[in-house]
Amino acid sequence: MEEILVHGGRPLFGKLEMPTAKNSILPILAAAVLTRDAVCIHRAPFLQDVETSMQLLAALGCPAVRAGQDLLLSCDGPVGDTVPRPLMAAMRSSIYYLAPMLVRAGRARLSFPGGCRLGARPIDIHLEGLTAMGARVTARGDLLECDAPHGLHGVRFHLRFPSVGATETLMMAAAAARGETVLTGAAREPEIRDLANFLNACGGRVTGAGSSKIVIRGGRLHGCAYTPIPDRITAQTVLCAGAACGGEILLERVPFEPIRPMARLLTQAGCRLRRLDHDRVELVSDGRLTALGTLSTGVYPAFATDAGPLLAAAMLTARGTTRLRETIFTNRFGCAKEFARMGADLDCRGNLLSIRGVPALRGARVEAGDLRGGAALVIAALAAQGESRISGVEYIRRGYEDIGEMFGALGAAIGRSAQPERETTAAGR
Ligand code: EPZ
View 1 (cartoon, rainbow, N blue to C red):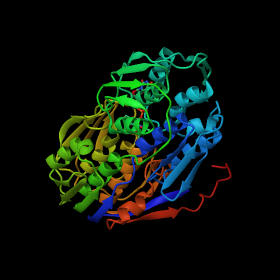
View 2 (view 1 turned 120 degrees about the vertical axis):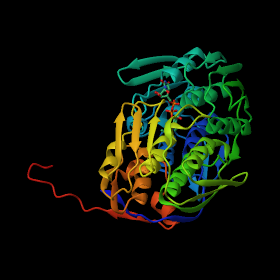
View 3 (view 1 turned 45 degrees about the horizontal axis):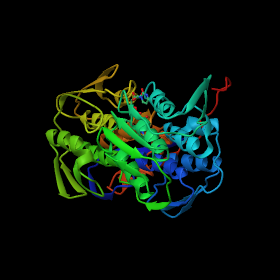
View 4 (view 1 turned 135 degrees about the horizontal axis):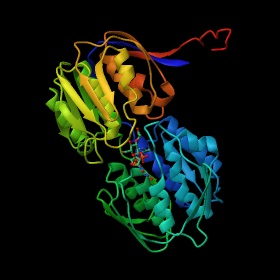
C-alpha cells in the first residue's frame, strides 16, 4: 500500500504554476463527444480522473490519445450507449457522459456515479432537466436506462439547486438540442463559464454562463483546440499550506476572482496576500495564524465547499477558535478524526466543525477518505512536528498530479513510500 511520507515543521518558499482545473477538463472531455470533428485539449493534467475519463471515452468508441500535454479526440464513428459499471463507480464525473450519449447514440445505459463519499449525491436534477428536454429515464435497481426517441429539444428549466454537474449536463444537452434552452437557477462556478467557452469554440451559442441564467441555442458543433482554466482548488491548497507552515509563495496562472473568499480569510488570519497582476498571487506568512470565528461554505461565489477542509487544516494551530459550517455536502469533514490523531483539538457535529487551535501538531499515521480531505491531511502533516504517513493516496491522486512533487518544489520534506504489505494474520486479516 503506497503512502505519502512527510517530515513536517518546515516553512515553504518558492514559485508554482497552477495546473489545469480538474473540474473544468472533466466536463469538457465529455462535451467533446458532442462533435464528430477532432478536438484537442491543451495542458491536460496527469490526473487519475483524466485517466478514468480516457478509459470511459475508449469504452464509448471515442478514444483520446495523449501527445505530451495535449489530449486528442475525434468521436467520428458511432458512439456507444453503455458505460461499464466500474467506470461509473470510479468518479462522479462519469455522469457527464449521459447527455452526450443521448445526443450521439440516442440512448444511454449507466449505473449511478461514484466519487468522493461526501454524503448523498443524487442526480435527480440532471434527470429532471433531460426529461424536460425529451429524454425518457427508467431506473431498474441502480441501473438507468435512458433514451430520446425524438431527440432532445430546447426547454425553459429552473434548477431547484445550483448544481454544478446538473448545470453542465443540461448545457451539453442543450448545445446539441433543437431550439433554445433557458436555464435559470444555474450554477455560477468558473468551470461553468469554461464549459460554455469550450462549447462556443465548437460553434455553440451559449450566453450568460457564470450568471444564474444561461441561454443556449442548439445546433451542430464542430471541433476545436482549447485550453481549460487553471485549478482554483489546487491554488487554495497551496495557499493554505503556506499559511499554516509559514514562508513565502508565489503562485502563477491563478485568476484572483475565484479565490477571493479564501484570500480574504487568510488575510484575516494574519497572512499577507498580494495580487501581483491578473493571474499571479503572492502569500507571505509567519505561520502564526489567528482563528477566524464562525464562517460557512456556500455555492459560488461564496467560500467554496472544496476549500473548507483545506482552510480547516490551516486553522488547527491558529490562536483561538474557528467554527466552519459546511452547507453543500453532508459528509465533508471525514478528515476531522484524522486531524485529531495529529493532536488537533476539534469536534465535528454533523456539518459543523469546531476547531480550538493548539500550539503544535504532531506527525502521525493518518488515512485519506476523500480527495480534498486527503489534501487537507497533507497540509496538516506539512505543518506538524515530526513524521507523518498518509495512506489513501488513490483519493489524492484523483485531483492532484503529484502532491509530493508540488510541495517538494517549495522545500517540503515529502515523498512517497511503498509500505511493505502488512503481514496477514492466521485469520487472514
Ligand atoms: C462538483 O460536484 C465538483 N466536482 C465538486 O468538486 C464540488 O464540490 C461540487 O461541484 C460543488 O461545488 C466536479 O466538478 C467534478 P453539485 P457536483 O451537483 O457536480 C446536490 C472535488 O473535490 N445535488 O453542485 O457533484 C448534491 O447532493 C469535487 O473536486 C442534488 O441534490 O456537485 C450536493 O448536495 C468534490 N441533485 C449539492 O447538490 C442533483 O441532481 C451540490 O452538488 C445534483 C446535485
